[in-house]
Image 1 (tube, rainbow, N blue to C red):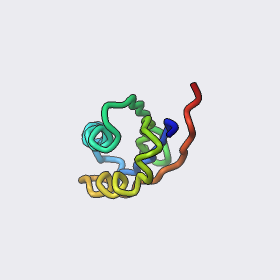
Image 2 (image 1 turned 30 degrees about the vertical axis):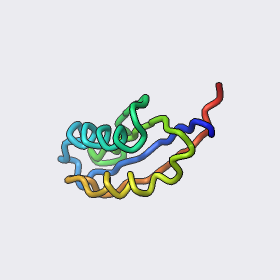
Image 3 (image 1 turned 90 degrees about the vertical axis):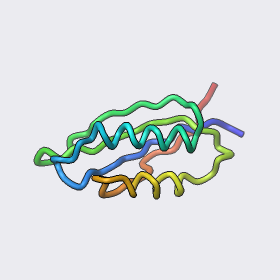
Length: 92
């Protein structure tokens, strides 16, 4: 099977939500789901001080859907929503 790169967009409940705490907890859940993998994070300004957390990670395509991972991340304190915004096959 191929390796894929998944991008998650995590929206906090409010601009005051601690994104660094969510980031660390989400990275832990991603590692449990996909195994030791490369993970890149960035914050994307949305509006009025609200920022989204975007997390890119690599996983094996044979794992299938990320629905279970999305559900676990959405259950974290301070998270409003989680959405897969991009999935690509890695080449090379």
